[in-house]
Image (cartoon, rainbow, N blue to C red; front, side):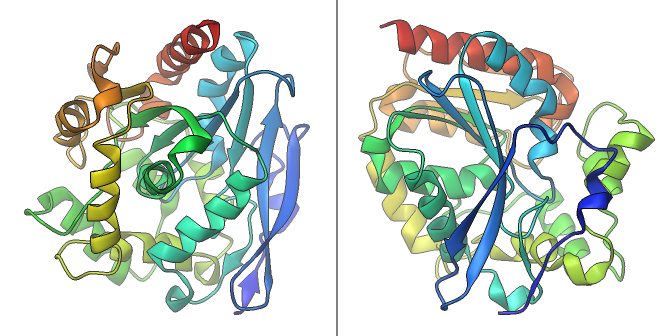
Length: 302
C-alpha cells in the first residue's frame, strides 16, 4: 500500500494544533497507518467521539467542540484515514467500506468503553456499524445528516450526481464541494482549510473513493453488513438522538427512519434545524454543540 502524508505546513492557518495527537493502526496488510486526532478535556470526563464524513476532516467540528468542552466533557475527534492530517493510501483500490470500519474500530478500541458517539455523513456509515457490532462500547449516539444504506431503494438524485462528479472530475475542488453542501456561505479561509489536506490529486484517493463505496444495490460491498447492522440497531436501547438539517437533500429522509427503528431514539429531543444544509457543523455549529452537550450531560447525570 503506497501512502502519502500531507506536509504539516499545509495546516498552519487552519486550526490550533495544541491538542493534536497521533497513533498508528495496523492497516491489515502488514503496514502501519498514522491517524491524527484531537483529544481535549478532562481524561476522567464522559468521552464524546466525533466522526466526520466526506470530504472533510476534524476541522469540521471546530465550533461544535467548544460547547461540549465548556460542559466539562472530553472530546476526541480523529481524521479518518485518507483525510486531514491522517495518512492517505494513494490508490482508490486501497479504500473499502470494511477497511474503514476495521480501522476506526482499532482506533476506538484504544479509547475504552462508554463512548458517546457523534457522527455525520460517512462518520455515520462507519460509526453506526461500530455501534451495531460492538454496542456495549457505546453509551449513546448522536446521528446527524447520515445514513446506513443497504442497497435497497432509490438513492437520492443529488447523491448520484455527487458520486459521478467525484468519479469523473479532473480536479476535485474540496473547498467548493463543502460550500455546495452548506446552506450558508463559508469564508475563503474556511474553504482553504478544507483544501489544505490535499496538495494535489494524488492525495485525494479517499475523497474520490468514498462516494463510490456507498452501497446503492443489494449486492454492493457493505450492503449485507449494513442490513445485519440494522437488525442489531433495532435492539439498541441506549439513548439515540438525531439532529438533521432541513436543507440536506442527501440524507433528510433518514431522520425519521432512525427515530422509528432504533428503540433508544424514543422520547429523545430530536431536532430538525431550519435553514441548515448537509454540513450542519458549518451552518449551525454552536447550536449543534449545545444540543450535544445537553444530551450527553443529561445522560452522565443519571
